[in-house]
Image (cartoon, rainbow, N blue to C red; front, side):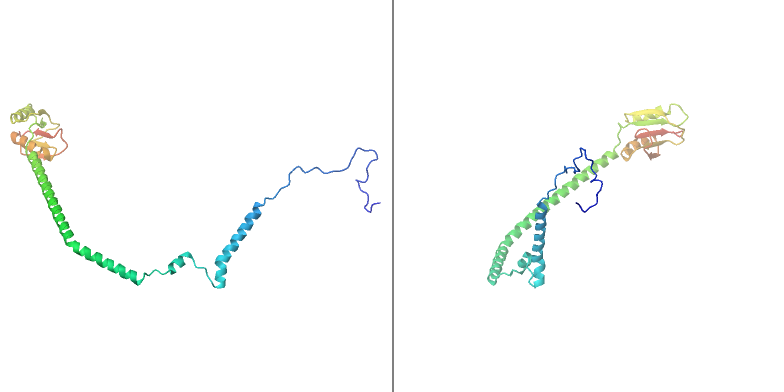
Length: 233
């Protein structure tokens, strides 16, 4: 007889196929712990103990451990008296030898320096002479008129045939590249225009041949030299 009261599990029919209640088997595998975690833990613990013993414990006991830098700095670095004397003697001998050899070396260096200075002065003089010659030739070329330069003669008056007459005059003066055309507007005073300083001598030559006194430098002209004949020509 049981001391517990009857429940639904005690009321079993007389004829039944029921075999009883059972639990389903666990299909998952049991988790096994790796010993690597224990090894790592013991290693960290040993490291902490070692650091404590090396750094903290000597400070507590009053016997600090000397480091390599402190040991090297506390090592004696002063040379002995005999070594100092030997070094002083060697320095004295070297100074004596240098003093005995110094006059000849100084004379050689002075001679080489004088030669280099003379060569440099000669080169500078040659360069200055070349520059002067180039400037002189350029100035001479600029002062000489270029009779083969293109010169345009333009009629700025109301008289027909004026540009052709000016062209004929310049051709007679030696100009070989002269053209004739009409100016865009009427002018009273004849003038010779030139584009740059290099064309000034040629413009002066053309103005002298035509008897024109007015000249003006400008780039707003057709070509390098433009002769505009006005009503005063």
